[in-house]
Picture 1 (cartoon, rainbow, N blue to C red):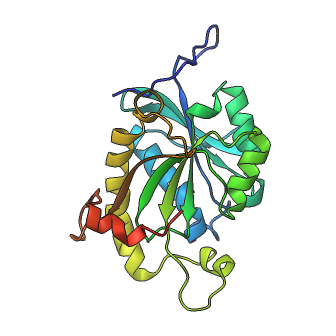
Picture 2: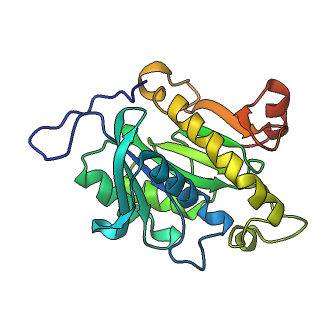
Length: 235
């Protein structure tokens, strides 16, 4: 499997063709680390473990880790700014590594997907997500990939802004380990495909698959049609 694309670079140490930039969004600091809003940063941490790399603070107010995923060179990033200022670090990294928008993946929390559901799409709006809004503004384009990590809707009349800034529940935390493991398997299977293999529909969005919690607590699998029906109202 390969992440394919038109990018080729010359004359830069450590820069090879077809490098991808994968960024996990969140708020910085230990007080935010367990929040639902930091789901993107959590996934980035798991990816760094998978490729055997450590995040280090670098330029553009971002932490960076480099390695290979499914044999492909990748740069992982986590903005060290608050969520609503994520665009500056993302645009800075994309410019430094010469990554076009079509080879950028932004991982973020998604209220409109059930907890544990993961979807990949190209382009589209920000759906009220301040981090995505900042990234789109700084890049000047919506045409980058987003991995949407479902955190579910808040209970009752709770304000969504309050809900995302709270830790996952105890039951959710028990599931996260298995979800993360399944997510990594999905990432290495699905992300190599979108640019070359999947045509963009006339509606303007590309949806490359859904992953959800399996009925078994200790595994994550692709959704069946019946399972996907539970998130039919998501955007």
